[in-house]
Image (tube, rainbow, N blue to C red; front, side):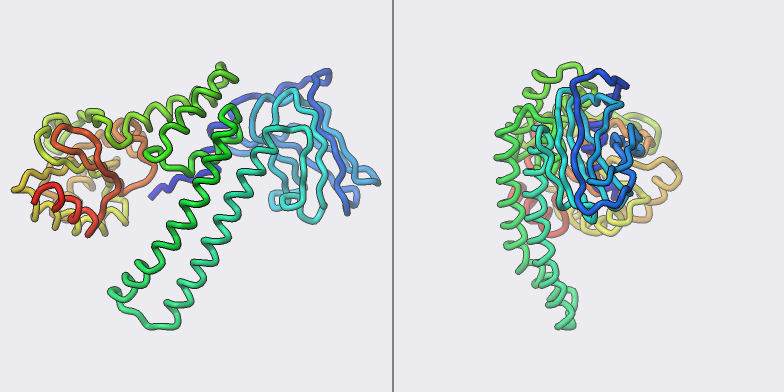
Length: 375
């Protein structure tokens, strides 16, 4: 539930800067659109809510244009004919951009000379496109195999396991290429969007480097400060770190602390009564708890509910007999923000000293890990 939308989060981070009316500034954005017929071209700033229109021009008989009414601060922008035909740009106030494109398909044909940030953005986007095309091809093969054979759940699991290795190979290869490109551009806003496809546990040093690079180049930008806050939370909950304490109300009304469970292997389980995947996974969690609770295993349930009665009803109905807490703040839960939870179900496994040793374990994977630790 609530999957992390990479481009949406990128918008949120990149677009808190304002654009200033300034006809005398050094910024330039002009170009030529081939195959145009006197259409109106729009210039927009992309924000977390909705695009903000900055300027518009009618293309001349040669398809040429120039925007001259605004000087943007660093951020994510686009030029468009409509919401289906647009070109993305990452612009700064000193850019002098010459944009060329084909009118029929701005997004797949444009170049933007004079914008270093857009150049990096396009390079990173190209790496993502290659990954997505390869994954799409793999998925089509998987779907064909499923349709060709009437499969029960056991055979489907076997087929999924067969495809897991090539899937991981594609993702890992693409992520390594993206990481290398970001490593070469740790002071670029464009790297902010791409890095969020990379796991903080695996790429912690890269997150640190980008955070430091952006703070040196743009120390007063709100988006940079937001990223710094996000990175700080991410790095505080990477593998090997001592888990930040959680102290929240229990169903009975008193407060329970995660730190009180030190000395046991603890699974922090972020869930909610309204979360279908969470409820579907719960029988596996109940099974694991029954199997290992007498061997030094405990669960600390953290609910992202808003309605206390529904929370309590789900605890009883699903047979959760382990400690539970919730501040009933939905996605504004203090614990969820502390652990940078972007989707649920989400789990964090702690050793007896309270250090984070694994994440997002489910089903058989959870039982196998607990067996390694407790048998």
